[in-house]
Image 1 (spheres, rainbow, N blue to C red):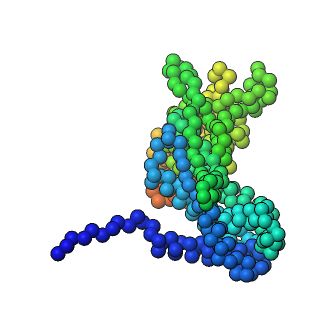
Image 2: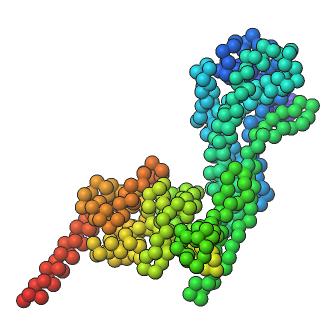
Length: 419
């Protein structure tokens, strides 16, 4: 019997192409009907549809700086995250009351918009009916802005996610590109650009350590370096409007991850920047502290020093930590020492987020009296609960025993004084 080899499929044959083209036409006409009260079947003939298809917007292409070393799989994941976001948001057209997914607009919608723009400029007389029917659509610039904002909401987050402040700072840029060929077409490019960090060496107690400059990026910009106002920091030897660059040590980043243990590093870094810009600066026991705000709830402090006209974030102290106003109050009210805090995991945000402490009246009131109530107000919905369990019962029983023990000591002390 003759052995014949079957020809390999390239993954997208002519049958697939025909099916894809049919779907594109259906979606294009659906959008055309959503953006105008005119019947699109009377305005778009086969030649027009073919022309639009050949110059269609090819949606999203993700490219990355070589320094990022991203695999094709990682690039595909980024693209899928953007597509998911676009499929989760709609745009409603006022003249028809119909909605279009931003995902559909990003492909067939932009293709339609581009075609109408071409004929409006090149041959408006020949296509008078088309231009007139979609005049309002051509003026809908807000739709493009909304589309870009939606893509940026994903890509900016991805930029934060890929950033490692001691290694690289990642900034995504979203642009519309035109491929010039026999059949020119559009596509949306998401480019991930990498920038080198800035660092300084600082000497604390004879130990020389590196600190890395805190940066933010937005919509493809180069790093914007975070600075703090001298007046806000209480640096009276400098002009009030002097801006001080901010650096952070790896030790502080590690403490943030360790103590804000239920949040992704990306979310921690976003809240770090927000806290540096918005948190109140106080002096306590000779230390400068900046409130650390997590989803606008004060959960701790950034301990900072000013060295050679630079702000150095040395560590992060959660509210229950000693050497904070709230942590010292907790010690005075309850008598807790550091081993107690560690044993009960009261130095981790997850204990407060995922424990039903707010439902335990005695425990809740003690933390509230100490000034730690904001730890109980951080919303659970922002976190993945999978790996955390409630410790409210353990904390309550421990506290009750601890209080009984303290009360017994007080009674014995009073007895010895009087007898």
